[in-house]
Amino acid sequence: MSGPSPATRVASPDAAPQTQRTSRMAVWSLVLSIITLGGLGSLAGIWLGFTARRRIAETGEHGSGVAVAGIVVGVVTLILAIAYWAYIVMHTGTAGSGGGGGGGGGY
Image (tube, rainbow, N blue to C red; front, side, top):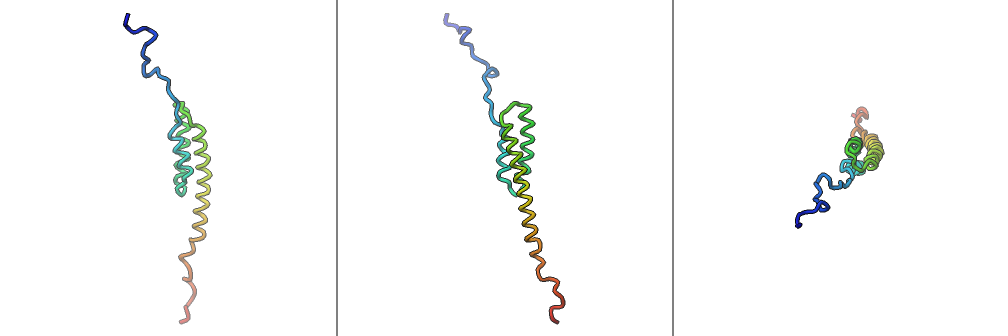
């Protein structure tokens, strides 16, 4: 009479309810896209966002919206980084050539 009853069976670890977590890859996609790192973070964020969306579709994790946000923010920050670097090149590209070809110099 002191044996385990069928109602008090121990559930196997496989039968335990799985908690859905947000994809870490999707979160990193958004983080790197925000940080930008001169455009490199944006590229990494875009790549991670697409990879995370593909993996989320396979595994069923949460975070598809975070991955999309990482892609969108990555594209926007990449465009801003390209514009920034173009501005820097246009305004400092001619700084090293100042005064070189002015003629004979008065000799």
